[in-house]
Amino acid sequence: MFSFADREPWSAPLTVLHTVLREIAPDVRLVWWADFDATLETLDLSTDLQRFVDDFGV
Image 1 (cartoon, one colour):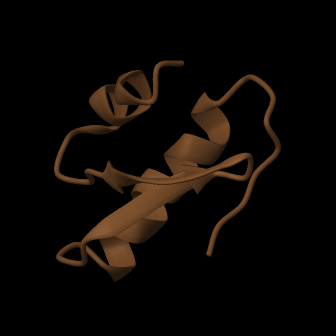
Image 2 (cartoon, rainbow, N blue to C red; image 1 turned 90 degrees about the horizontal axis):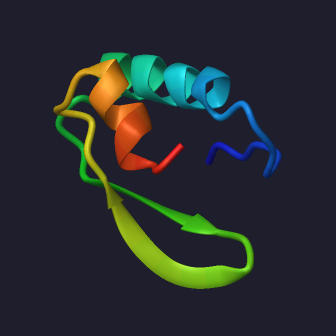
């Protein structure tokens, strides 16, 4: 499990997530959720880094 503070800039922790998870678990289905909402969201690592960050809406 990864966790990071709810503050900008988001690009740094998202870069770490994208890089590490693509290296150690490229074929594993992943989800994320905010601590205030238990709704699971799909995490797509098949995109490039910039698209991954953009998809988070940051």
